[in-house]
Amino acid sequence: PPLSPHDGLPNDPALEGKIRAGVGFGWYGDLERTLRFLFTGEHGWEGRSYRGDPDPYGRWVVAGNLLTRIRGYEEAGDVAAALLRLAREAGDTQVGSWEAAFDGLKAALEQEVHPSRREIFRGFAPPAGALPPPTFARTIVPLLAGVGMESPHFFDPGHHLSRVFVPVHLIHGREDRLHPFTESLRLRAGFPPSAPVTLSLTGLFAHSQRDGVGHMAAELAERVRFLRMLSLVLGMV
Image 1 (cartoon, rainbow, N blue to C red):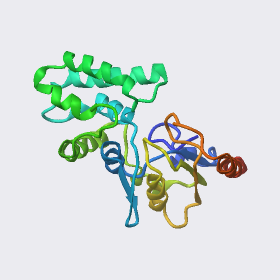
Image 2: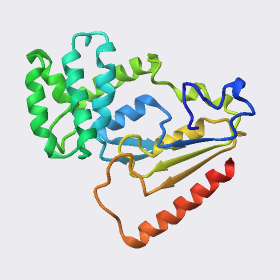
Image 3: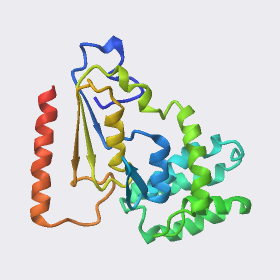
Image 4: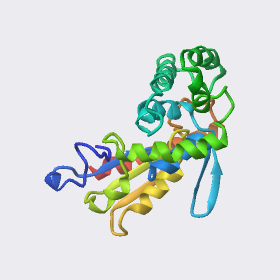
């Protein structure tokens, strides 16, 4: 089973001898850094900076579930509900949440939000092609991360890694638009040096719908690499 803060965590002593391996696909190592990526597209590892194109769906889901838990935002249930409506629409229609097709729905939902909170809604759901305002991102990201870490549905994996006693294989798509690949690098570094952890990066998966297909030769090479990853994972069990 995948690493989880809930039932089935491979570091639970009661499960020792019952779980032979753990596999994580597209994980994160630091919640606040992951949220910052969703708002700014910025991520990095060991002094190297990267910029990606984050999937707005991640902002909508996180804020829809956590916004009203932030002190001062308790009355923003209308914003949270509107963001979850956007997320459900994207999931139901299987249209990329970054597409301009959702701009009309954003405008309609904004009218259902109290006028005093419409700027907050626009911060989470700007028009297609735009990122949230930098000042809004700098303010809201640590607040969301703070309440997220207190929620039973989120967790800091770093608190658990030292107790993982089974082999773990992490797999991450280089073009992941929800959790940047640098988060798996960070997660791997959080395990003790003696932990049997391996990491594979692949260009096949983006954690969201892909915009197109790459060059055939490159695609084939990635598929071969993925088959090797799969072989390694199956060999663990």
